[in-house]
Amino acid sequence: MGYEIDFLPVGEESSGGDAIALRYGNLHGPREEQTVIVIDGGYLDDGEALVEHIRKYYGTGIVDLVVSTHPDRDHINGLRVVLEQMTVKKLLMHLPWSHSTDMARAKMIFSLNARALRTELRDSLQGATDLEEVAKAQGVPIEEPFLDWTSDDGVLRILGPTEDYYRELLAEIIEPDSTQEAKKSWEAAIRHMLARMVPETLWTETLGEDGETSAKNNTSAICLVEVDGRKLLFTGDAGIPALGQALDVLEDESFQPGSLDFVQVPHHGSRRNVSPSLLDRLLGTKGETAVLGEAFVSAPKKNEKNKHPAKKTTNAFHRRGYPVYATQGRTIHHSYDAPSRAGYVPLSALPPGCVRSHVVRPNRWSASVGWSR
Image (cartoon, rainbow, N blue to C red; front, side, top):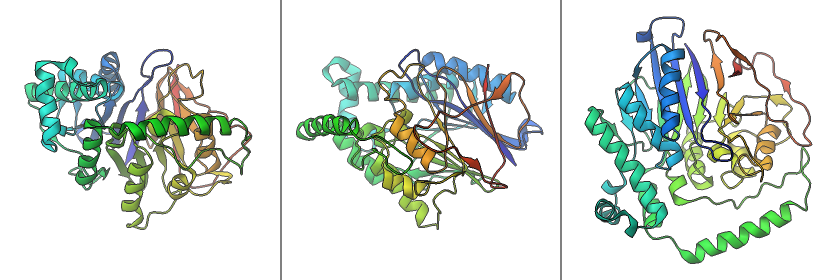
């Protein structure tokens, strides 16, 4: 059984997002022996590109599963187009108003006067409400992506969030702690100043242990796809606590660091979403000189402030045997036991800063990575 994964470019210039298509099964055989999945859809225009890509390269107008990791506009808006223009068998998305009376009340206020809500809360409700309405209109069944949700064939499962953790995050989204927000801003400024004073080497990294992201990002559904013994992890915009909980689940199943064949760098490579100790648990310790797997990041064309992706984040992945490949305005492709594609050429990983070249470990895995010209 083979698979192929496509990260489409999202946004223009310095804005980014996620729009991911994948399929697995007998990719050399008929459509009925394959499963097609979409994970996030970028902005509205990116949804159009996803539809065109799936029809052209997967040869189908049917999507077996659509996953909305969380309701940020750069992830959710394009999914409306996928649901409207393709036959979708099932949608995974969170319905926040079903888990919080405050969120249900906010949804009612939103329907009457959207401007009465904070921008972040309004945007979350807008994306989720619109997608739910389209799904209902198209007759697409909705299920929620909480821990232990598993596809019928057992290939895709959700590692987080748990329903209890999701409720905690909703409470924070509804009423954020202004004191904590101010503290985060101050700590971020200090970390940024200190990081500029310490150069990175293969063994010395400035990535911190105290990175924090928003509650909304931590609601991201974390997906693990296992095909023919190969593990593929999709992280959305999840941060350290959310990813840590997912790792707790994997470690209870004897997961070994470095056993992933493919991993999505969370939140477009933000330095706040990962830490050295988290990456040690996920990928292995720094100083790895063999390539253990590949990492993809959805990144905008421009990255003038080294934010998406952050160099210290991509360096940290490189140090642990996972070279990072970025969209940066192009579609990038990773595959195993899949047909070759005309027009796709080999892709170079983002260059690591002050890190030794990697050597491919023989017989570890066999896959191809490329991008469309």
